Image (tube, rainbow, N blue to C red; front, top):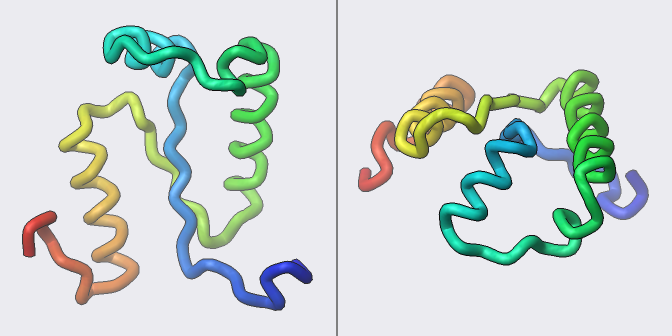
Length: 94
């Protein structure tokens, strides 16, 4: 808390994605595993559980199932942002 001197976000977006789905997407794109991925699934699961716990106690948290298609996920996030801030553009290109 000291580092941000009381400045906290109005909203925090968490994208929740099972490891096997994330791995399949990475492999499909032909990308190399990053350091966290190379550290193994046990660590990745521990980190994911940690973020889920943080989100549970975070009144600013919006958790989205990132298994959705990209356009659907983006639309759901945009809808949530518009609910929070009605002036937020309804479409990406507005």
